[in-house]
Length: 412
Ligand code: NAD
Image (cartoon, rainbow, N blue to C red):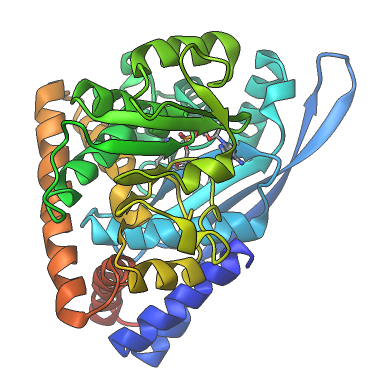
């Protein structure tokens, strides 16, 4: 099922459960603003090429919109719209003063030079400049974008305004108003959710068998923290394939190997496996941390993990959700499990607006406090209503926005 369709289907289910007011239900169905921009840039060959970029601001009832920028060949308006909607629910669930947005450019950065990527980023920023800003919409990194991308966006925005604006994007380098702990925030949050959810099945971190799909920012950081806490990371993968060792992989060495060779396969003492194999391995916890639509009705019955912690956005389809819930698999949904990034982005924005920066220990402690607190609100709700944790999390997020919309009223 296409991603947007499955997000809208889930929205319908939750709106029914919440008995959401018809007017609010309809308002939240549509993004506030969707931009499609063309981005002409000069390639290194001297030829010009036009890329297509998007920025969708789904809802801004609770505050400025917030969401990442993705560079990938699969980026299109529907995907960006679905991801923007998920950001609205995520920010509301985590009680941040933000609405949801997402952006991206349909491109393959793997075949582009740094110069081409910089020109692409600066021109894209210029094309969407009228609708971003610290009080309007605050982009951040996502797939294939990073601190350097954010530095270029911040510089382009600041140049046009005529003064330095730190709070226009988050996920920036420290020297440009970035926050300590931002780069590993999402992976660290995933780790906190593993730590919290295994209490439900009375397991401990030591010896916990974990399989992780995706070995980028989210997957590799989660893997590193789990490894440092004595878990057995038995398998990891990236787009080229996976590595498996039932006795556990030395994650620190694998990170070096992956940096050097751009693959996690062909590493000493591991068997090469496919991404499909990884998802159905015998393990305690499965962390999909790559792309959407990985756990479907075709493989959900074969998943052996007792807990799934969604590092990626939208890795499980609604049909698979139902199968997993009926089978008693505890699934910690994306909008909670990978919220560490946006929570620390919020900390970064607050620090930028105050020109006052916090210690890393303070940041980690506040992140853990927020995530564990929300986990302990969502889990009881799912049990009380006999619903899966995703539905409970969406209900909390959507009802917060609905309450705010109702209180603000309909303009004019
Ligand atoms: P990344 O680009 O750093 O890493 C992505 C990883 O997934 C890479 O290892 C890549 O090889 C792998 N991958 C890509 N396609 C794959 C496929 N078909 N099968 C298996 N592996 C594949 O990206 P990231 O920042 O780690 O983001 C991963 C996911 O987490 C995305 O869904 C993103 O939206 C989500 N997310 C990221 C953040 C963040 O702060 N980075 C925050 C919230 C959610």
